[in-house]
Length: 341
Ligand SMILES: CC(C)(COP(=O)(O)OP(=O)(O)OC[C@H]1O[C@@H](n2cnc3c(N)ncnc32)[C@H](O)[C@@H]1OP(=O)(O)O)[C@@H](O)C(=O)NCCC(=O)NCCS
Image 1 (cartoon, protein in one colour):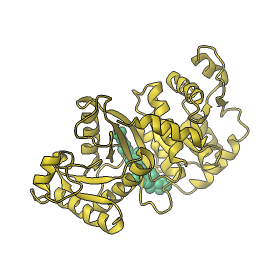
Image 2 (cartoon, protein in one colour; image 1 turned 90 degrees about the vertical axis):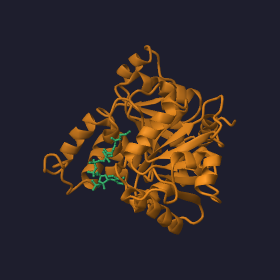
Image 3 (tube, protein in one colour; image 1 turned 180 degrees about the vertical axis):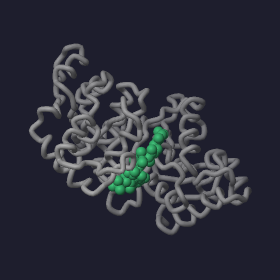
Image 4 (cartoon, helix red, strand yellow; image 1 turned 135 degrees about the vertical axis):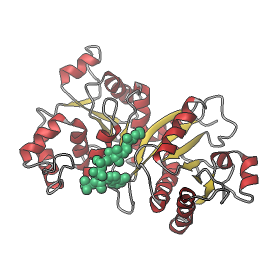
């Protein structure tokens, strides 16, 4: 079976991209920065105080890693002005007040929130991607990207997928060595149109990141009309829309999970379908289903879950699970570098 992560790292190395890691206060992030550079996967900018970062690396220099301290960096004022301009007129939902009343406000805020600082570096073109979330929530990691980097031209929305990598001993249903599961991290309850666009982004990610030809299943508790409910109609409508907006991709649904990945069940529940029983991109009806299924496949199926990986942003930003290891961070950095291609 092909080693998907090794292929991703190899492709990333050839691109020589720069990725910012804003959480220089986290030891795993510091170790991942050193390891990424050592493996030649990407250039790294780490945000934090140089002495503090060095202390987390056992007092050793971080050879090849650029450490930037936002408190003293020459471009901090420029980034604050940029944030102020981009968010001018926006009201903070919690306080009902402007998000940033002045440039000084914006500056004070980015000096407290290095994830936003990193997003501004990305916006300015000073780095090619950002990975954060080892010690911040998903919402706090993704919000700066949504507010500052925004949706890519031609994309309808941002969504998040997991690259589910089969265990080394293989999995009898997983024909390509991995699945793409979406949306597992961002959109709570997408409607039919949003589901269709999540599927489109996921199909593109399957090709660009996993290097597989997508066979997309829209997952439901019904297969081809076996159950009748508004939730089922939402999914079957999404399939229709998807076929209109992306006829070049092979997709089918609505399908139950087993009908999507088990060949005999696919054949019996959706006879003649070239996706049923062989799907490698699974689009779930809502975040409850997506999130629970990725954790299920990870824990009970022994798959490695890499993500959540954001798709549809104008420039790549990716989140980490707070339980991540330094190796997980290196893997997400490699994917981020590939997305910046
Ligand atoms: C990411 C998230 C925090 C955004 O929530 P929020 O800050 O309340 O979002 P808002 O609705 O205020 O939107 C903030 C901005 O992001 C944009 N946005 C929100 N969702 C978006 C999406 N899916 N695609 C593109 N843009 C989006 C909004 O348009 C808005 O832009 P603006 O401020 O320039 O007008 C929210 O979607 C969320 O919490 N998702 C679930 C994350 C989670 O808990 N995952 C757990 C499993 S890992």
